[in-house]
Length: 363
Image 1: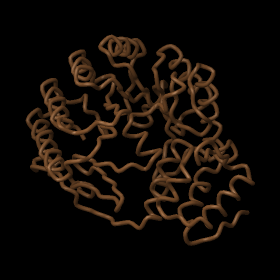
Image 2: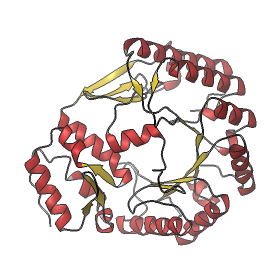
Image 3: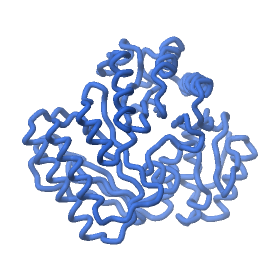
Image 4: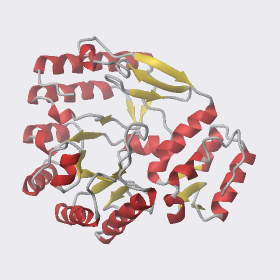
């Protein structure tokens, strides 16, 4: 939602700061694996409030042990950047910036009520970000958008080749299938991903087939340390702010505002505590882990064992998937999706959701 009022922005940030401080008082011995600011557009804050956000971040990590691989990240859009904000990011340790592009085609963007950015403007901001010390810039693109075709995807790849961001993240459009009809079949979505994948690999980006993050650095997963730990290792995370999600070894929680009809009414609160808490058995936590790791086209067998998935069920499903050419085994108990598996990734990863209760039937 739009929030142009500077005082409302400030009050919202201070409420989040209060919640962070209360969390730190309750959990004094945590090791911070990552810190992402997003789930919206923090760069849309006024200059003064963006500076306040950076101050809140510094207080949040003060006195907290940081993991060796700790890498904070922040989201933004081209039309909300400023040199002052870029300087503040870099000065406060944010050297990874993720910017949404979605598509280079104006007609595609307009069908999804999104504005477009001029390529010259994008190039200028990327150059300024690198000059300010933002070492990693990620650009988000999507496939499955209305109006997308081979030509528009080729235009996207040509834009990427000229802008040369350090990372590219590729998302499939997921609609609410109850209320919205999908624009493309699963086969067409597969073909669109293949076109992006082949094009990005040809441009010098690294990724396994089935992965949605691409990086110019072969040793980099293409995500922030928070998302890497959450996606690959099922790490616990805490969300701050209106309707934010959290997850621990006990279950999932959502903050105040998740089901609010008019979330604007919630902005003047002094904090946003967890309101809806779902205590989940280990097998359902494993399902959540599988759903997130699917974005990377991989998962850890050891992690599933940690959740309590029975060895018998796990071996049955893994044997089936390997025999059918849907998955292959890598190093250290990691499983990776194949091209055949990616064609049916929804059904494939769902096999593991109920591995503790049902047998596998394949037709």
